[in-house]
Each structure stands twice: as C-alpha cells, then as structure tokens.
Image (cartoon, rainbow, N blue to C red; front, side, top):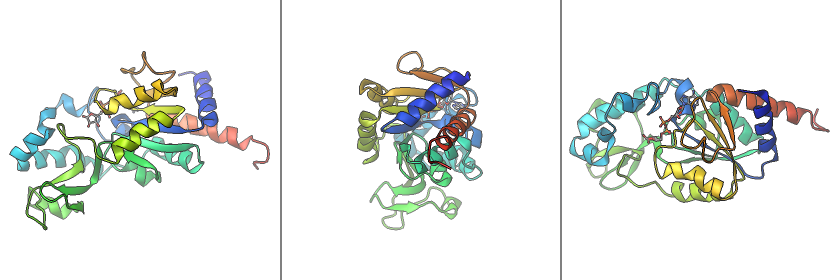
Length: 256
Ligand code: APR
C-alpha cells in the first residue's frame, strides 16, 4: 500500500467538513473477534439461520448457547485495538463526526469514542420479547438459559438485531441522515454484503461523498463506489493515517 495513497487520504480527511466512519466486523478482527465472512468467518462454520429471530423464539436454549459461544465468550476477552483508538482520537480532534457501525462488541465505547450509532444494536443489554424491558447484561443471567424477564417472565434476547428483525431506531434514521450529510466516509472492515447496512456508503456516494475504503480484500464497494482503496488491515492503515494526521497538525503554524 503506497504512501501516496495515505497522503491523499489524509488530505481528504483533514479537508473534510463532515467526516464519518462506517465499519464492520473486520475492524475488530485484530482484537480477536471473528468476522462473519471470508477467512475465519463465523458463517463458514455455523449456519446463519440459527440467528434468525424465528429460530430464536422456537428454540431459545440452543440459540442462547450459540449466542454466548459466538459473541459473549469472544467479547469478554477482546480489547480495543489501534484502529478503534485512532477513530476515538480523530473524534477528540473534532475531525470525525460519527461512527456508524454494524458491530455489537462495544469496543468503540471502550476506546473512548462518543458519537457511535449502532446500526445493528448492541450486546451490552438484553431486551424482553414480551414487554420490551431493557436490562444491562450480567453474566449471572447466563447461568440458567434462557434468561427471562423479571418484569413479565417472557424470554430475554440480546439487544442486537437477528436476521428477520428491523433496524433499531433512532439508529436507522440517524445513519441515513449522516450518510446524506457526510462529504468523506471511511469504510472500514466490511464486506458490504448485508442490506440495508450495505446501502449506507452507496447513499453517501450518491450524495457526493468521497469514499475511502480500508480492507485487506476488495469488496462490493471497491470497484463501484470507492475513491481511495487503502488495502491492508484496519490497525495498520488507521495507525499510518493517524500518525500522518498528527504530523500534519503539529506542522500547522501556531501549533507548538
Ligand atoms: N482489517 C480490516 N478489514 C478486515 C480485516 C482486518 N484486519 N480482516 C478482515 N477484514 C474484512 C474482510 O475482508 C471483510 O471484507 O472485514 C470484512 C468482514 O466482512 P463480514 O464478516 O461480512 O462483516 P460485516 O461486513 O460487518 O457483516 C455485516 O453481516 O452477519 C451479518 O449482522 C452481521 O453485522 C454483520 C453483517
């Protein structure tokens, strides 16, 4: 991956009026969390229909066992990586306005980011399928499966969306609005396979945004909407970007 591309991307980032990031599972791979597709992908080992909402309601115990194995067991050992930290630093500089993520692993919050829109919900809390009561996750809840609501006794599910469920609000509306406003979008670690999330960068492009894509592999976006393809891992590329951004900012007059 050439330095010229990094320099061009940094110039676009620093000149941006409304820079946002759109991220997928790939940004957390270097934190030890499996992606869904491609090398080591969960869906190369498990049938994704197991995470369909109808299957969850039909066989909650088996579904909960898989959810704990696929997500909660991985998340409890994961730490934010250099890419999560770089995004948090860009937000604290006032450069990055929002992160729209498909991820549910809470690593952005733990890296210090604040304006995070979780397009697929999050794993930090459970929601009741009967009365919509929301409770923070406590590992003690997993001692007896399936966890049930103390309020009404109905089944509790993680507060992230399963296949067959709608996009949570206000995350959905906010995401589309951000994509229509953005003039530069960092698309990091997503295969662009899952609709409607996959349509978000396309909406930004149609609204005139410059698309910078970070991924070791090319994707549905690379040959269609991507303006600057930074081929490599999220940690490597984001580390190079943030280092160059710090250099450029420190060279500005009046910055000591
Ligand atoms: N750095 C950056 N990108 C990486 C890295 C890395 N170290 N390793 C892998 N990738 C890329 C892969 O090349 C792939 O393009 O991350 C992408 C992961 O794609 P998916 O596993 O499909 O993840 P994502 O795009 O987030 O999936 C979208 O699908 O199953 C649903 O709800 C689930 O939110 C998920 C959605």
